[in-house]
Image (cartoon, rainbow, N blue to C red; front, top):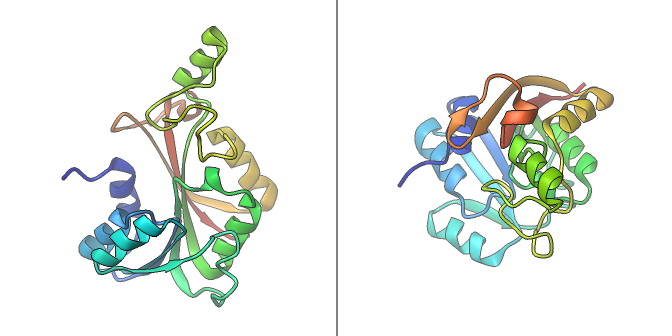
Length: 195
């Protein structure tokens, strides 16, 4: 089985033996990778019943909950790393979730699809239609996304909130993007620390 590029990048960004909380952990593939390759102590929060069963079947610790209200029970700095990968665009209270993630974690890794990459821009400009891409694979009427953001949007947000971007990685079709990421990257991964 091939490991997703974003999971490999996040695995590189997590130190050995760290305590990790994965918000919106899905089927637990990333948590399994971190436990196996980094010997990380991992746990997740997930809303979907089927995904929770898959996590439990892999021997992972996962709690059912809504990440928009699920962090209040965790003490400050309880985790080395909090991960919010490919779920931020589905969250209504993004600012609250990110601030809570920075409260319970020393670092936060955020990954999201970049709505401003070239193919999305072309689809909007020439076809006048909401783009459907590998990283945004849904029609507008069935998407779980409640917001569409770009790399530039996210960096502006971080600056305005006083969050420090420690590292940033950008990808497109299995490749690392090093220049013009807002135009060329389909996905972004950031490492944040608090003000």
